[in-house]
Length: 199
Image (tube, rainbow, N blue to C red; front, side, top):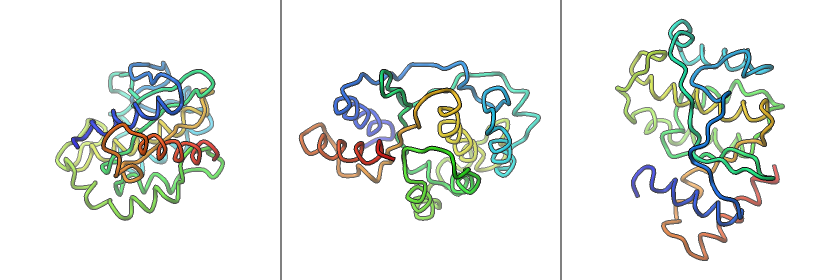
């Protein structure tokens, strides 16, 4: 299944199980492509440290044009959380490095230990994925991978500060045997959601 197709499928099943329409075009004024003290509040020092640990260029980061970021989906109502589907490229060495900086009090809807283990297993493949791609603030081979890890932190830190519930993450390895919408798929996703939403 092509990258992106599995995300759409899982999002649709999650939406059906939760009984809430997934919003995939929503924008938040605080969800932008660089970290600011205004948006990150108490976590600004942490995200700034993460950015620097990934060898980001602060001057280029702060001078780049503001662009709204997208999330895979948003579930409103009483759920009020961002949903992210993490494919293999999210489990890189850079992402593993970001987890080392996560404060213990940060509320997450996924197992940090599990995500770290997945990074350890898949980082070589993830690091090779589009390795030549760079970005203005991560201008080196592997820069796009570093930026992805940096931006994933936005999805973990910002919701708490901005009054949302913790971001719900499902990774491709949890649903590797789901290829279509059927009773098995619904039951499996329901079990995953019940576990994650009880964190």
